[in-house]
Image 1 (cartoon, helix red, strand yellow):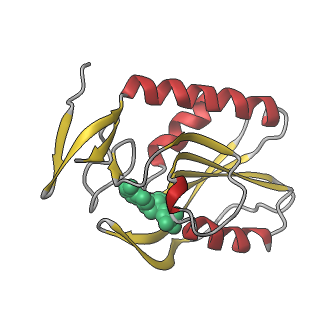
Image 2: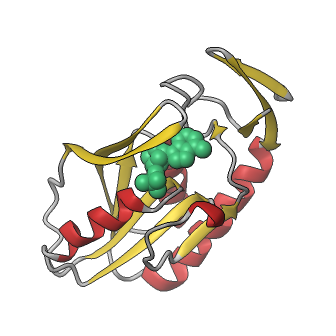
Image 3: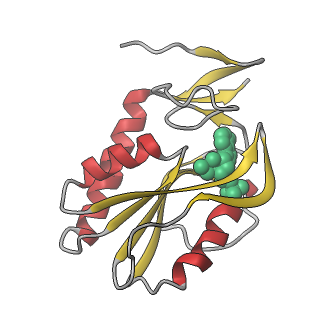
Length: 180
Ligand code: IMP
Ligand code: MG
């Protein structure tokens, strides 16, 4: 299927940055890398809703080995801007004690959401914690923590698609699109 080069969401126009083909090839690679380290560890993949719902589905299937899949819901964004406040909308329901946890994010921007969540998670005594993010904006990072698996580094631009939204639209686009 050929995807559109330009898409509109609400009042804004976005142009294609990564095609579906490129996205899926990278996710397959990430799954293979995770497989090397976790194939015999029955890890818990912890997707961060809503943005990581598609990436979590594709990454866990690319991993292809026994694992658990669970989700949490945090929110720090409103429109195009991070609000700086992280709210827990759905908390952690899995027992992570002595388990290998891989937190799965769509994008790390300032890092605030994951930095705050990491301190919550550590109190629950997991065997290990790793972060896998599909996208990273290195120029936007303000909170330092180790990010173990990165799909693509991108410039500090607002992007949508492959789970990422602009005010709840565009999550179902197959590629990644950047603000024009
Ligand atoms: P952080 O706490 O600043 O790292 O923000 C992370 C969250 O903000 C991500 O999980 C996304 O939900 C959202 N976000 C950050 N950048 C973008 C973007 O370019 N497009 C859509 N959502 C974004
Ligand atoms: Mg998110």
